Image (tube, rainbow, N blue to C red; front, side, top):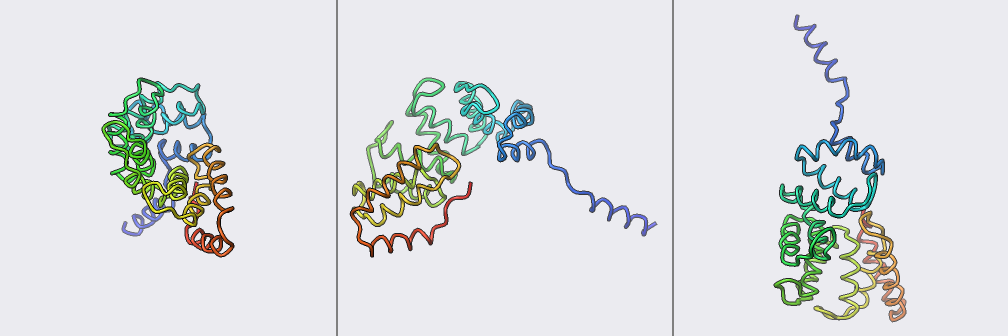
Length: 235
């Protein structure tokens, strides 16, 4: 009997584990199989799964697999954010900050950005940096505090935060002007991190080339050494 049980146990272990609809949906999202994502994640989102809600919001936000609908995107982001999804909180904050998909509300945008940033999401950290840079809502403009949050996001590979750091270093805004570091962050921001549109990477490339005109060959070599020590973000 023991031998039979051992064989049955071995057969169970030999059967590969099958992924559930959430895992399949997230994998389809990575592959850009948008119709499949909608099919798999919509029921889960309706059942209250925050990961599915965040991804479904992203589809409506971008018009992938569904007709673009900012109001629906904001609704899914909000539901996921209220369950603690930090990326959804940052995306909701962005829409509130600009008045996309609903009324502009800087105070609520700040609340969601801070929640996301403190949870460690790079999108939230970059967004909170912009709020400090702009002096939005109840905040006093504070480029040094903005730089702190941009740095946290940049260290995680956020291209927009890297572009913003390059700008701060180039202009000496909230920190000592440093063209070598400006070049570094512009160059790193030119890598597609899979999150932003091409305009972000184009601006980073333009900043890198602009700053390079004011650097010596030795300074560019120093900058490239720093760049080589920071791997590009992985999509």
